Length: 141
Length: 260
Image 1 (cartoon, each protein chain N blue to C red):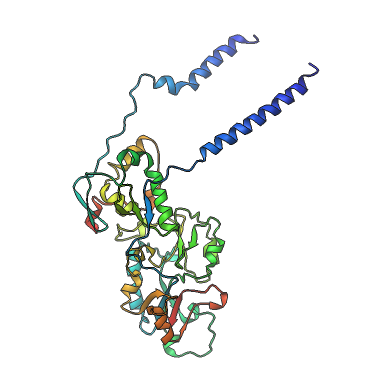
Image 2: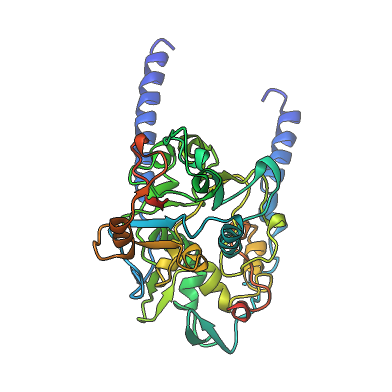
């Protein structure tokens, strides 16, 4: 092989650098969901008193995977179809509002939203416009 | 080596075909609809409905700057409209002179009451909104009930709508509006840098069965209702009083009427 003494070590170095993420993380800890602060107690949302600790509007696992799609669907239904009530799969009805429904319970953005978003390096721009509740949002109603 | 070019082209062509087919199949599989919500959607039972929302402003009652200021402040405070001085001003409601408001009306002589008065203005929520026609991304659109709405999520800040609007109803956020909002209303969003905003006829309040903020703050000087319903307050007010609209000759069919 022509210039093998340069080519082969060069290739070895390239492969080594290219696969660095794999072998650097080899044997390290498995990914764990960050600990998020879950809401507690009775919270008034849009006139109805809700046991915030009991359940989210949809099952937790489904919300964890799909909350972003759900919020986009809420936005489109509210703005384009003028349907601002979400009938959850268990029949409960909710106002489709990030700020006034979701964040009435999940009022602590740093302890809830940011935990997973930071861990996964995603930067949603929700709060460029939507207002982060100061403490618990229901104090302002 | 004689046949190699022909052979190479054959293989290359077949490979490209196979790749394109594979990519097409992968794209078709990938563009399957995102997991939709498990629930369904409905309009609120409390919602106020109309065939065509319209507003009637009684300029005999709403005629001083102080009264207008009160209404404007109520709206701007509720909707987190920033108070920015100078040319980068953002406004939903404002006031101006008769000649500026009604530039179609070119009477050389006017009663002093009209000539010297200020007129209350806002988005006209036109039947044929020019802003909607020019929006390249469909961020601004007309709802079935006659509201001209903006989806701020989609606005790219091109400001075509501002150029198209003959009423100057739209404002651009040249900068982050948050530092200019005193006393933030935590129940309503703000806007961000780079989007256009304007009056919404309080679409989200109508949905909850409430009248727009300005109507409530005006103490009866602003009426709001369904133009298609002959028994609504606006239809009755228009039937009983002579009214004018801003620049009707442009054909936008504005939805805000002024009783002079």
